[in-house]
Length: 197
Image 1 (spheres, rainbow, N blue to C red):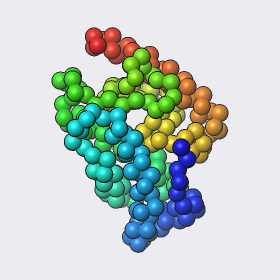
Image 2 (cartoon, helix red, strand yellow; image 1 turned 120 degrees about the horizontal axis):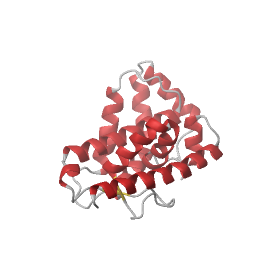
Image 3 (cartoon, rainbow, N blue to C red; image 1 turned 180 degrees about the vertical axis):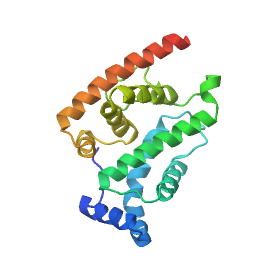
Image 4 (tube, one colour; image 1 turned 90 degrees about the vertical axis):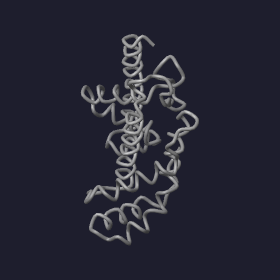
């Protein structure tokens, strides 16, 4: 799904003005990016267990708070903004899951799927915490492949948008996406065997 926003130059101009300290630029930027951040957050939350106490709007609001608290980020463009936002959403959800003690207690662990692409595990959903751990391990081996998964899965970006952010071709992103899913499938399967699930 292509991000439906005002032109990249317009967003980029506002991001750079915000970086320079123009708070009015942030006020103008917020409604322009809100819909897309909400769509991405809704996608994350759709995979969570019913009755999850963190709601979509709360996730978007937490991303905004962390973006504002980031201080002086040197925003490159719209793609950079959404890449950072995706990374923040991932951290927020993982921090929330860890704070609730799901990893230690088992059961009631939030589950998410890796979108419509072929799954990376034999079950339709992958445990968020296990996926986060696997992505960290993948990043140690191949940072770009880990970023492709993060941007596509957590950021909801398509192949072209991911390629734009990473500065590589769409073919490279497709290859990285395919290889990363295979690697994650193996890693998550090994982890399930170790944990006896």
